[in-house]
Image 1 (tube, rainbow, N blue to C red):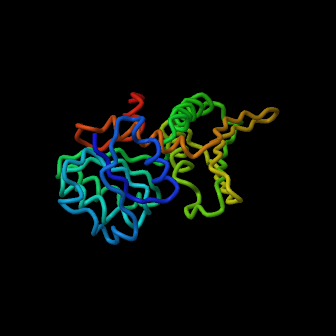
Image 2: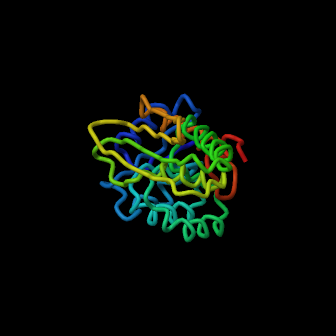
Image 3: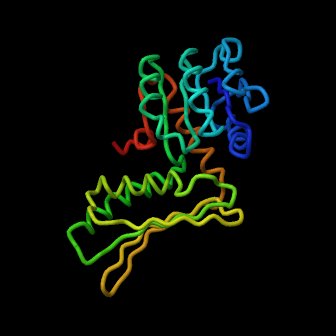
Length: 230
C-alpha cells in the first residue's frame, strides 16, 4: 500500500520510520514547505496513493481533507482541535465516497481506556455519593487544553450516562507525552483509572493500524470501529 504523510514533525517522522513494518511504502511527505494551504495535494502527488495520514495542524485539516477527497484518497486524521468543523468535513468525505478515521488519540491503549471509562461511568452513575474528575498532563508545547482525549473521556462518561458534573483540569509541563486520569471520589474512598504514555510511537503505531484498516473502506470512522468496539 502507498502512503502519503502530511505534517512532517515529530509524529510524521515516527510514522515514516514505522510505515514499512505495517506494509506501507511512503509515496510522499508533505509539510508546510510544500503543502501550504493544501497546495501539495495534487493529482501527481496522489497518483496510486491508497491512504494519507495527517499529523499537521488543526488549521490545515480544512484545506487538506477536501483536496484528498477530490483525489479519492482515504485519510487518517491524527491531529486535534478542529472538531468544530467535523460535520462539514464529514459531509465532504461522504459525498466523495472516501474512508476517514478520525480520533482524538490513536493509542490503542487509550481507546481501550476510553471503553473502560464508559463502563466505569455506568457503574458509578447510580451511586450519587460519588463525584468524578478528569485530569490530563501534556508537554508544554501542546496548544489545545483540555486535550482532545480529555474531551473524549468526557464523552465516554456521557455515553455511560454519568449525569453529574465532572471537573476537568489540564497541566502543561516539560516534555510529558501524555497522562490521563479519570477518578471517582466517595465519602470514604477514591477510585482512579490512569493511562500513561511512555513513548509517542504508540500514536504512530495506532495511526498506521488505522490506515491499514481503512484501506478500501468508505465512510467516517473512529478508533472504536478500528478496534471492533462498536
